Length: 287
Image 1 (cartoon, rainbow, N blue to C red):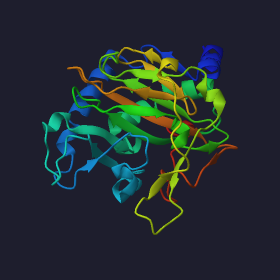
Image 2 (image 1 turned 180 degrees about the vertical axis):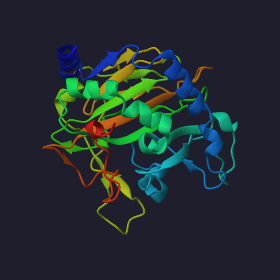
Image 3 (image 1 turned 120 degrees about the vertical axis):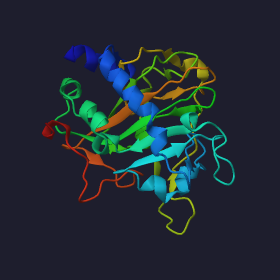
Image 4 (image 1 turned 45 degrees about the horizontal axis):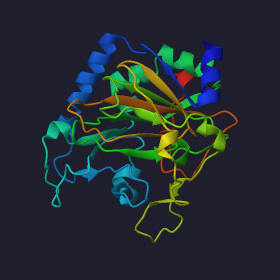
Protein backbone atom coordinates (compact mmCIF):
# COMPACT_ATOMS: atom_id res chain seq x y z
CA UNK A 1 0.00 0.00 0.00
CA UNK A 2 2.78 2.42 0.90
CA UNK A 3 4.66 1.96 -2.37
CA UNK A 4 1.41 2.04 -4.37
CA UNK A 5 0.35 5.39 -2.90
CA UNK A 6 3.77 6.92 -3.42
CA UNK A 7 3.93 5.62 -6.99
CA UNK A 8 0.48 7.00 -7.83
CA UNK A 9 1.23 10.42 -6.40
CA UNK A 10 4.61 10.56 -8.10
CA UNK A 11 3.20 9.50 -11.47
CA UNK A 12 -0.25 11.12 -11.65
CA UNK A 13 -0.17 13.78 -8.93
CA UNK A 14 -3.23 12.32 -7.20
CA UNK A 15 -4.54 9.04 -5.81
CA UNK A 16 -7.92 7.73 -4.65
CA UNK A 17 -8.43 5.69 -1.49
CA UNK A 18 -11.81 3.96 -1.45
CA UNK A 19 -13.87 3.63 1.75
CA UNK A 20 -11.66 6.02 3.71
CA UNK A 21 -14.56 6.87 6.02
CA UNK A 22 -17.16 4.45 7.32
CA UNK A 23 -20.80 4.92 6.25
CA UNK A 24 -21.62 6.10 9.79
CA UNK A 25 -18.84 8.70 9.70
CA UNK A 26 -20.04 9.94 6.31
CA UNK A 27 -23.60 10.22 7.57
CA UNK A 28 -22.60 12.05 10.76
CA UNK A 29 -20.30 14.57 9.03
CA UNK A 30 -22.85 15.20 6.29
CA UNK A 31 -25.55 15.92 8.86
CA UNK A 32 -23.24 18.36 10.65
CA UNK A 33 -22.35 20.02 7.36
CA UNK A 34 -25.97 20.35 6.32
CA UNK A 35 -26.64 22.27 9.53
CA UNK A 36 -23.64 24.62 9.36
CA UNK A 37 -25.70 27.29 7.62
CA UNK A 38 -27.66 27.75 10.85
CA UNK A 39 -24.57 29.31 12.46
CA UNK A 40 -23.75 31.58 9.52
CA UNK A 41 -23.80 35.34 10.21
CA UNK A 42 -27.06 37.10 9.45
CA UNK A 43 -25.21 40.33 8.65
CA UNK A 44 -22.04 41.09 6.69
CA UNK A 45 -22.37 37.99 4.56
CA UNK A 46 -19.07 37.42 2.73
CA UNK A 47 -19.03 35.96 -0.78
CA UNK A 48 -16.34 33.51 -1.90
CA UNK A 49 -15.32 33.26 -5.54
CA UNK A 50 -12.92 30.69 -6.96
CA UNK A 51 -12.16 32.68 -10.10
CA UNK A 52 -8.71 33.13 -11.57
CA UNK A 53 -8.38 36.87 -12.14
CA UNK A 54 -7.38 37.91 -8.63
CA UNK A 55 -10.27 40.36 -8.27
CA UNK A 56 -12.33 38.18 -5.96
CA UNK A 57 -14.02 39.62 -2.90
CA UNK A 58 -11.83 37.64 -0.50
CA UNK A 59 -8.68 39.29 -1.87
CA UNK A 60 -9.90 42.52 -0.26
CA UNK A 61 -11.38 41.09 2.94
CA UNK A 62 -9.62 40.97 6.31
CA UNK A 63 -12.43 38.57 7.30
CA UNK A 64 -10.93 36.01 4.91
CA UNK A 65 -7.31 36.79 5.79
CA UNK A 66 -7.96 36.29 9.50
CA UNK A 67 -9.77 32.96 9.15
CA UNK A 68 -6.73 30.69 9.66
CA UNK A 69 -7.65 29.84 13.25
CA UNK A 70 -11.41 30.41 13.05
CA UNK A 71 -14.59 28.96 11.61
CA UNK A 72 -15.89 31.47 9.10
CA UNK A 73 -18.64 31.37 6.54
CA UNK A 74 -18.42 32.21 2.85
CA UNK A 75 -21.44 32.49 0.57
CA UNK A 76 -21.93 31.62 -3.08
CA UNK A 77 -21.89 34.25 -5.78
CA UNK A 78 -25.53 34.75 -6.65
CA UNK A 79 -26.70 33.91 -3.13
CA UNK A 80 -26.29 37.41 -1.67
CA UNK A 81 -27.82 40.63 -2.98
CA UNK A 82 -26.26 44.08 -3.18
CA UNK A 83 -27.50 44.96 0.30
CA UNK A 84 -26.39 41.70 1.89
CA UNK A 85 -29.78 40.04 1.70
CA UNK A 86 -30.07 36.34 0.86
CA UNK A 87 -31.44 35.61 -2.60
CA UNK A 88 -31.76 31.85 -2.08
CA UNK A 89 -32.79 29.48 0.68
CA UNK A 90 -30.22 29.59 3.54
CA UNK A 91 -29.66 25.84 3.26
CA UNK A 92 -28.03 26.23 -0.18
CA UNK A 93 -26.46 29.68 0.21
CA UNK A 94 -23.00 28.74 1.49
CA UNK A 95 -19.98 28.07 -0.72
CA UNK A 96 -17.71 26.89 2.10
CA UNK A 97 -16.84 27.11 5.78
CA UNK A 98 -13.18 27.42 6.82
CA UNK A 99 -10.40 27.41 7.64
CA UNK A 100 -9.97 25.84 11.10
CA UNK A 101 -12.65 23.18 11.39
CA UNK A 102 -9.83 20.75 12.23
CA UNK A 103 -9.18 22.53 15.53
CA UNK A 104 -12.46 24.29 16.28
CA UNK A 105 -15.05 21.58 15.59
CA UNK A 106 -14.72 18.23 17.45
CA UNK A 107 -16.20 16.02 14.71
CA UNK A 108 -13.88 17.34 12.01
CA UNK A 109 -10.95 17.36 14.42
CA UNK A 110 -11.50 13.68 15.16
CA UNK A 111 -11.34 12.73 11.48
CA UNK A 112 -8.40 15.00 10.66
CA UNK A 113 -6.18 13.67 13.44
CA UNK A 114 -7.31 10.05 13.13
CA UNK A 115 -4.88 7.17 12.91
CA UNK A 116 -5.84 6.51 9.30
CA UNK A 117 -4.75 10.04 8.29
CA UNK A 118 -1.51 9.61 10.22
CA UNK A 119 -0.98 6.28 8.47
CA UNK A 120 -1.40 7.85 5.03
CA UNK A 121 1.06 10.60 5.92
CA UNK A 122 3.54 8.00 7.12
CA UNK A 123 3.09 6.07 3.88
CA UNK A 124 3.79 9.26 1.92
CA UNK A 125 7.01 9.86 3.83
CA UNK A 126 6.01 12.81 6.02
CA UNK A 127 8.34 13.21 8.99
CA UNK A 128 6.61 16.01 10.92
CA UNK A 129 3.34 16.79 9.14
CA UNK A 130 1.09 19.62 10.30
CA UNK A 131 -2.43 20.56 9.26
CA UNK A 132 -2.49 24.02 7.71
CA UNK A 133 -6.17 24.47 6.92
CA UNK A 134 -9.51 22.73 6.56
CA UNK A 135 -12.76 23.49 4.75
CA UNK A 136 -16.27 22.19 4.37
CA UNK A 137 -17.26 22.70 0.75
CA UNK A 138 -20.94 22.61 -0.16
CA UNK A 139 -21.22 22.65 -3.97
CA UNK A 140 -24.97 23.01 -3.54
CA UNK A 141 -27.41 22.07 -6.33
CA UNK A 142 -27.99 24.64 -9.03
CA UNK A 143 -25.78 27.28 -7.39
CA UNK A 144 -22.50 25.59 -6.42
CA UNK A 145 -19.88 27.55 -8.34
CA UNK A 146 -17.15 26.42 -10.69
CA UNK A 147 -13.65 26.10 -9.26
CA UNK A 148 -11.23 27.26 -11.93
CA UNK A 149 -8.13 25.31 -12.91
CA UNK A 150 -5.48 25.76 -10.23
CA UNK A 151 -2.67 24.25 -8.18
CA UNK A 152 -2.93 24.16 -4.39
CA UNK A 153 0.70 25.31 -4.23
CA UNK A 154 -0.44 28.64 -5.66
CA UNK A 155 -2.07 29.30 -2.29
CA UNK A 156 -0.04 27.12 0.12
CA UNK A 157 3.52 27.43 -1.15
CA UNK A 158 6.36 25.55 0.50
CA UNK A 159 9.98 24.84 -0.40
CA UNK A 160 10.33 22.05 -1.26
CA UNK A 161 6.79 21.36 -2.45
CA UNK A 162 5.47 18.62 -0.17
CA UNK A 163 1.90 19.66 0.65
CA UNK A 164 -0.86 17.08 0.19
CA UNK A 165 -4.58 17.77 0.12
CA UNK A 166 -7.06 15.28 1.58
CA UNK A 167 -10.37 15.69 -0.27
CA UNK A 168 -13.18 13.60 1.22
CA UNK A 169 -16.60 13.68 -0.49
CA UNK A 170 -19.54 13.14 1.84
CA UNK A 171 -21.82 12.54 -1.14
CA UNK A 172 -21.05 10.80 -4.41
CA UNK A 173 -19.06 13.18 -6.63
CA UNK A 174 -20.26 12.71 -10.22
CA UNK A 175 -19.88 14.31 -13.63
CA UNK A 176 -23.22 16.02 -13.04
CA UNK A 177 -22.66 17.58 -9.61
CA UNK A 178 -19.05 18.75 -9.94
CA UNK A 179 -16.51 15.97 -9.40
CA UNK A 180 -12.81 16.80 -9.58
CA UNK A 181 -10.94 16.91 -12.90
CA UNK A 182 -7.15 16.56 -13.08
CA UNK A 183 -4.36 17.00 -15.61
CA UNK A 184 -2.38 13.86 -14.92
CA UNK A 185 1.32 14.37 -14.19
CA UNK A 186 0.99 18.17 -14.31
CA UNK A 187 2.63 18.32 -10.87
CA UNK A 188 5.94 17.68 -12.61
CA UNK A 189 5.86 21.11 -14.28
CA UNK A 190 6.52 23.22 -11.18
CA UNK A 191 4.41 25.96 -9.57
CA UNK A 192 2.79 28.06 -12.29
CA UNK A 193 1.89 31.10 -10.21
CA UNK A 194 1.35 32.23 -6.63
CA UNK A 195 -1.29 34.13 -4.65
CA UNK A 196 0.54 36.21 -2.07
CA UNK A 197 0.08 38.94 0.50
CA UNK A 198 0.28 42.23 -1.35
CA UNK A 199 3.65 43.92 -0.70
CA UNK A 200 1.92 47.25 -1.41
CA UNK A 201 0.30 47.85 1.98
CA UNK A 202 -1.56 50.92 0.69
CA UNK A 203 -3.44 48.95 -1.98
CA UNK A 204 -7.07 47.87 -1.67
CA UNK A 205 -6.14 44.33 -2.68
CA UNK A 206 -4.72 42.50 0.33
CA UNK A 207 -3.84 39.49 -1.81
CA UNK A 208 -2.54 39.41 -5.38
CA UNK A 209 -1.42 36.90 -8.00
CA UNK A 210 2.21 37.25 -9.07
CA UNK A 211 1.40 36.52 -12.74
CA UNK A 212 -1.59 35.91 -15.04
CA UNK A 213 -3.48 32.65 -15.01
CA UNK A 214 -2.05 29.97 -17.32
CA UNK A 215 -4.27 28.54 -20.04
CA UNK A 216 -4.84 24.81 -19.74
CA UNK A 217 -6.41 22.87 -22.66
CA UNK A 218 -9.65 21.41 -21.37
CA UNK A 219 -8.97 18.24 -23.35
CA UNK A 220 -6.04 17.53 -21.00
CA UNK A 221 -8.30 17.04 -17.98
CA UNK A 222 -9.62 13.67 -16.84
CA UNK A 223 -12.72 13.43 -14.66
CA UNK A 224 -12.39 11.55 -11.37
CA UNK A 225 -15.86 10.66 -10.05
CA UNK A 226 -15.69 9.05 -6.61
CA UNK A 227 -18.04 7.59 -4.03
CA UNK A 228 -18.96 9.22 -0.73
CA UNK A 229 -16.44 8.35 1.98
CA UNK A 230 -13.50 7.93 -0.37
CA UNK A 231 -10.42 10.16 -0.12
CA UNK A 232 -8.66 11.86 -3.01
CA UNK A 233 -5.04 12.71 -2.21
CA UNK A 234 -3.91 15.78 -4.15
CA UNK A 235 -0.29 16.79 -4.79
CA UNK A 236 0.10 20.53 -4.29
CA UNK A 237 1.34 21.07 -7.85
CA UNK A 238 -1.18 18.98 -9.81
CA UNK A 239 -3.59 21.10 -11.86
CA UNK A 240 -7.23 20.40 -11.05
CA UNK A 241 -10.67 21.98 -11.23
CA UNK A 242 -14.37 21.25 -10.78
CA UNK A 243 -17.38 22.35 -12.79
CA UNK A 244 -20.33 24.29 -11.45
CA UNK A 245 -23.06 22.11 -10.01
CA UNK A 246 -25.97 22.41 -12.43
CA UNK A 247 -27.62 19.25 -11.13
CA UNK A 248 -30.30 18.75 -8.50
CA UNK A 249 -27.90 16.93 -6.15
CA UNK A 250 -25.42 18.55 -3.79
CA UNK A 251 -21.75 17.51 -3.54
CA UNK A 252 -20.65 18.18 0.02
CA UNK A 253 -17.00 17.48 0.87
CA UNK A 254 -14.57 17.91 3.73
CA UNK A 255 -11.01 18.80 2.78
CA UNK A 256 -7.79 19.68 4.57
CA UNK A 257 -4.13 20.26 3.69
CA UNK A 258 -1.10 18.72 5.33
CA UNK A 259 2.32 20.38 5.10
CA UNK A 260 5.77 19.11 6.02
CA UNK A 261 7.46 21.10 8.79
CA UNK A 262 10.81 19.32 8.94
CA UNK A 263 13.42 20.67 6.50
CA UNK A 264 10.65 22.48 4.66
CA UNK A 265 9.87 26.21 4.60
CA UNK A 266 6.30 27.49 4.63
CA UNK A 267 6.26 30.81 2.76
CA UNK A 268 5.60 33.96 4.78
CA UNK A 269 3.99 35.36 1.62
CA UNK A 270 1.15 32.83 1.74
CA UNK A 271 -2.27 34.25 2.55
CA UNK A 272 -2.74 31.72 5.36
CA UNK A 273 -0.36 32.28 8.26
CA UNK A 274 -0.04 30.64 11.67
CA UNK A 275 0.36 32.82 14.73
CA UNK A 276 2.86 32.47 17.56
CA UNK A 277 0.18 31.31 19.95
CA UNK A 278 -1.61 29.18 17.32
CA UNK A 279 0.98 27.34 15.23
CA UNK A 280 -0.17 24.72 12.75
CA UNK A 281 -0.95 21.58 14.80
CA UNK A 282 1.48 18.70 14.21
CA UNK A 283 -0.35 15.56 13.18
CA UNK A 284 1.80 12.94 14.92
CA UNK A 285 1.75 14.88 18.21
CA UNK A 286 -2.03 14.74 18.55
CA UNK A 287 -3.56 11.73 20.29
